[in-house]
Image (cartoon, rainbow, N blue to C red; front, side):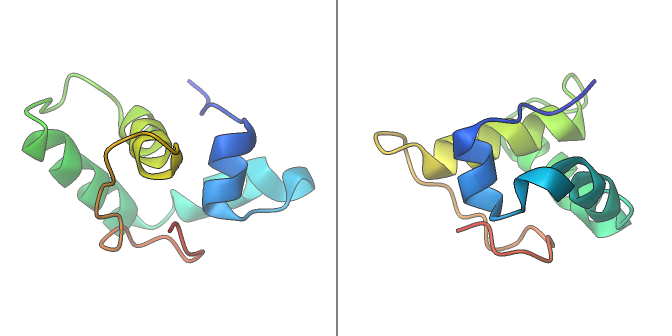
Length: 83
């Protein structure tokens, strides 16, 4: 599975387009990110039915789409600011 790589996700993460995949891989090497994403999934009553990558994708879209409900993404341990 690969993450959605679109303008919303790129803008939310602030990562360079030409380093997007490498940066994504580097971030997922930190177990704290997966733990935080699993916690978000559990809070949404998703448990382990969806991947951590999908949780990140949805959280980014919900947090950065103009008319979506804003989520508190400050707890995600991604080295680049998500908000």
